[in-house]
Length: 434
Picture (cartoon, one colour):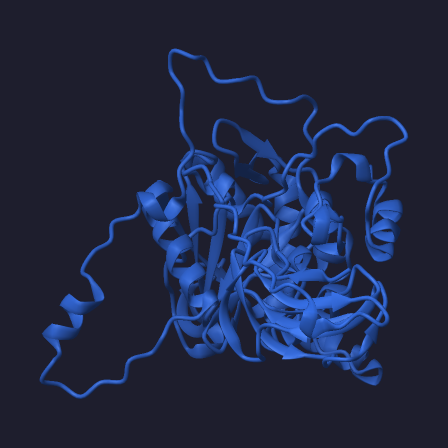
């Protein structure tokens, strides 16, 4: 019997994708777990695995096709001896609308559908890889809704469930007298000028029209949401880097035989991770109707790539050495530039760092990435005249930092305490090794 292979949801926010490359052809035999294709989401290029066994009878979507909606048939799998040409043409399945509450937390939360309770002893349909991941992470497959063919649980479903915050009890229903309907974030955003209106303004000028890809659409929507819904305020400080630069030079000389070279950004990551532990109230995110205060220091770091940026997350950064953070950051940045990051690599964290110092920018204000509570904008280190401890004038390497803060999560005094803790760590780098 012919089985439809549907466009999968490879990330919690994916609604459509580009079928970048088929790794099988019609007539190939596949088994569960085999890689069928490479699919571009709004954030990365990811591999799509088979969940059923059979023969690829018909490929319905050609390589390079963009805008393929989730749950749309992309191929047909047939059994041995079955004539694919005689199989009924599959009907396209419309993607279910994704309703996100118009809050930063809801927009960023994994879109994991709750599973209907299964009867005791009922068979759970899941791919072998999904079963293995569930076993390793301690997830109950009966509580996960599958998005694969015929409701089968696939890898993306398990990873989405693992990334979702656990709920201690089901949410209470909204009072009948005052129902609150969730609406897609895009519906709350102003449309502004239409494309036709803008094009008419430049009708007599030469221009190149660039179609937005999924990443740029996501960035535009999330940053518009951030500036419209998050009450930003900004705290600015300067940090003297001379002690850190001297310490870094000494460490790099000792680490050179091992091929390790630490950057200033590696120290900033460590300084921020320790500051989140020293000021735990700042280690928090906005969750719509409450604040979530995190225990570990999960630090996101902005990485610029062609056409956009990623913010991969260094988890438990406070527990790792500076050299370990450096190696992990290099790996994440390399995979970000080739769009090989998995959703769990760039989701989460309570705080982010955006460093434009290497581009010669002295200072700037960064936009908070919801649901984070704050983001640190880092400028270039420059030589400046300063007043030394003895009152005399001298020259020091000074770096400007601006902490953008979500006022719903962090108040002014708390933000100032958090920024001071970061700067104290950077100006006393030896203490970060203790």
